[in-house]
Image 1 (cartoon, chains in turn orange, purple):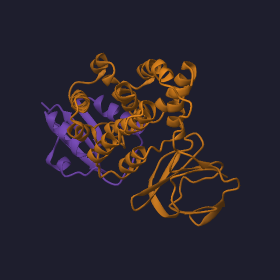
Image 2 (tube, rainbow over the protein chains, first blue to last red; image 1 turned 90 degrees about the horizontal axis):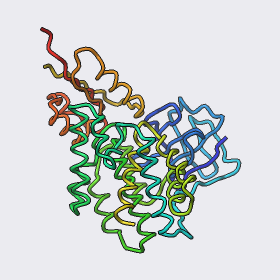
Image 3 (cartoon, rainbow over the protein chains, first blue to last red; image 1 turned 120 degrees about the vertical axis):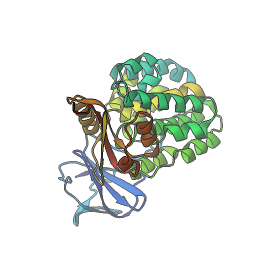
Image 4 (cartoon, chains in turn green, cyan; image 1 turned 30 degrees about the horizontal axis):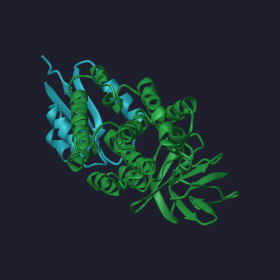
Length: 271
Length: 75
């Protein structure tokens, strides 16, 4: 059965882009839709399916009442639309300030040594292999330094497309920055739209997946794990926040941790 | 030292797989440095800075997977 459909899933006909164990990505022009199992969970462009073998599907058609996977029609029995916007009603800055150090601690404790968490604790650089890994880290450090010094365009250009993974670590970091800026706007009441625009424009990439994820983050659309984390940062206690952080960090080898590093560093500076 | 570079086009692997492969390559006998990354402009710049960019890898695009290794030359 179909469990949820993301609020950014567009109607249309899609072809398979890439397949993984728990996710099949479909593409139509610049639009992405991912059919995922419930362990991945809801997201802005995710269709969560349970008890359906979608691993070999090649074509997807999305309509109002359901989807067709390789022409097999699957109706939404109980239409459940996942809202990817973060609602922070009732949030206060004091809770955020109290919880931010817990987020940093969770990141340093649970993230892969090859994640960008070295930006929070430089001694982690010693764990990287000499050669490519250290050159990559130095490149990231310089890019981030430029961003925080106010040279956003040149810093983001250095970070974008940089690092390990199908969506490179730098792109995940920038997604975290964009979500962090959107969140900071809600806390501090400042208009950060020019900064958001500058970051997004500088992060241009030819990678279809990175482009799709950056666009969603730019629009403030996030998956359920990240949404729960941001809400717990603003509204929850430390135990809940730690649990939500671990859930995000478990995404991919470094993707979740890289996104959280960008989010944390941005909130620390802008919120 | 000898640099060996390969491009895998149109194949997508999750980050856990990519990291595992990179670790295995780096641990192989005779390999002194290795990278398994997507062929973005910035990754190619870092490969160049660390001496791992070959003329073939230079031609790769953002969606291509690059596998680069530095190997000790046979005596």
